[in-house]
Image (cartoon, rainbow, N blue to C red; front, top):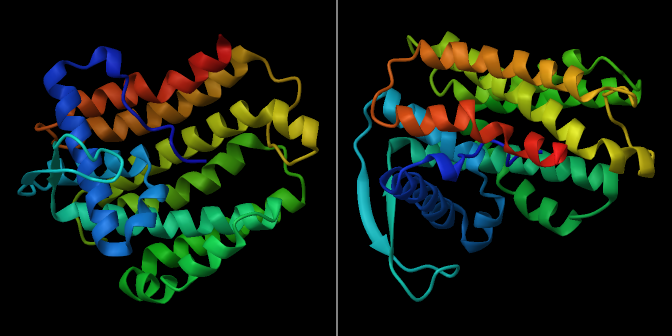
Length: 265
């Protein structure tokens, strides 16, 4: 379900592309250091967005470097890490585990990977009890609604949005917690709805659950997505961001719509 929150590269300058890529490589490096080389398979641009928002918001110092890695062994490339790279990596693993668990449940695939990742849960749940509990209970609630074949797409997207909203609140005592929660919630709603839209034909063919009406029109879908994106953007604009604001706006106002435009074509 993740992987929709990415930039529109055609609208970024060369310098902005390099900055964006360096944060992606920084999060990849952090995942590799904290969880081993196979953990980078869980990496998504969604958590790069989270890391960049939080590091900008808190003026987190950046550690810059050059390295070669397995995907890019020939030429050194730049990476940037911040205090929030570790948090974003931890959230990637938490969300990745429950996403994999859902895949095992629905498709029966990934059992070995799920078993390995499950070993990481106790430490992550102890470190982030609030977020871990919200992810677990939220996904359980979504699962129960799916079993009832709920066709209320807005309600279902809100359940997922509330999960991601909690992930965006790195510190419950933060002055910005409400806007961060609203930003994450809006993005979560958008991700859930867009994923349902992209999978609607496959789900219908396989008889799998999908919250969208089979006869939903493109314009109706656009309005649902626009409501979610607008909520995320309104919260985003209330945050005092400056360092990466142009890249982050590119993602929110253009990049997240890329898959929807591809489906239209």
